[in-house]
Amino acid sequence: MEDVAFWVLAVLAVAAGAAVFRVDSMARATFALLASFLCVGAELLLVDLHYLGVLVVLMMIMEMLVMAVFMVMYMMNPAGLMPMTMTHNARGAAGISAALFAALAAGILAVPWPERAGRPPRDPTFALGESIMGPKMAVMMVIGVAILATMIAAVVLATHRGRYGDDA
Image (cartoon, rainbow, N blue to C red; front, side, top):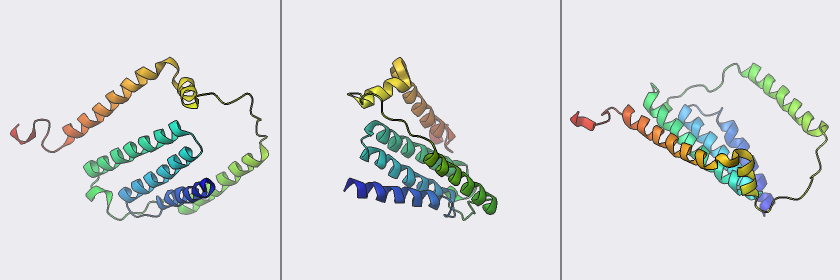
């Protein structure tokens, strides 16, 4: 059952990623990209990489929603929903993409894959966090909250009413 779910999510992730370039507005492209990343996050959860899976899901939801908010605020057309083309130089992009795909696929087949050395750690989430952040994990958690507060403040200050509402 997990194998079927994995392949279904893989196909959905690729289809949603391709939809980013097929839809006709920035807002739709943003949500297609979000769908692709959510499928990838679910795949990480399926292969027992719980920390990375939840991290990808949470990060991508916040990132895409912030992108949608900025589109609503700053795009000249209503919320990025006006039709537009999402591709430029389609032939050149297709050629570069095909060549890059062939090179990466050849690399996958040509490179000797390493054998596992040792055993997996008892707590892979802790080991991953320790290897990425080291002793700075608490600092990064505080910085994350500060960045969120900054984004909220920027959106509040960018509204038409301003910081103090209509009374100012």
